[in-house]
Length: 304
Image (cartoon, rainbow, N blue to C red; front, side):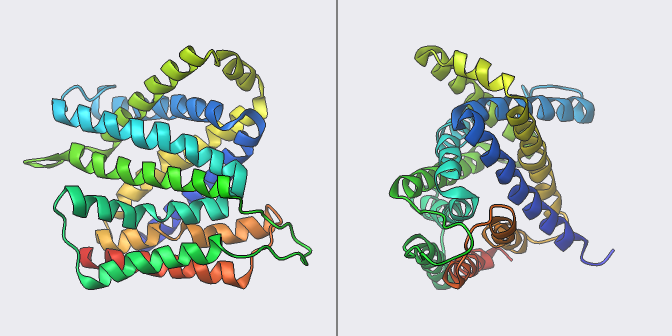
């Protein structure tokens, strides 16, 4: 089948684009923190079932100790701290701007890798980092237009800070995941690695809710059937199916081409913002998103 890898990559982007719509809707109903713990619980069930039917075990106890350490730390920074900020940003500034800021995780992870993992980058990749930052800046600092038949999404400072917190969590989590998955014989299984990250984050939420006495909010949240359904659909489409497809993409495309495709979420999300959320999206905002994606393309070119 021609263009099979490209079609799978586009399917992955659609999964991630659609999942954030469900997570935003659920977070508005029951709060970002409640959505997070419900989402992680559902994701853990799905990953455990996958590993059981595929490999015959539920937990990857065969992973070395260093993998459990780095992957658990990655889950705490990425899935726990980072996703708290992510879901708050979705409520505050919406999926479009949130995912655009989130796209900065690629150059940020590159900078962290350059600083701590002795990774090297050539000139056009540094240019790509700058171009991506420029594209995001074009959107963030855009002045709100008053005359529009569509809804004007207010880009608040608090929402932007939430977005950057989510982005930093994603970038730090990615670098730690890479360190945890690397072995002398190659990379460990990505599904099992993701499960370890989710377990660590889930345990952190258990501790947080116990110390802060917020279990009442979770019980109330679970009673909101529509929010739970939204969260379950988002979990199945995004963290589970999206991750599966993103790994399948690497069987057909090089890592650089795959990464460029997977960075298209800020572009794909624009039609959802216009037609689903009735949000005004200016030509400047579209140009900023395109600029950011082009910057990510430049950053990933060395991998092709």
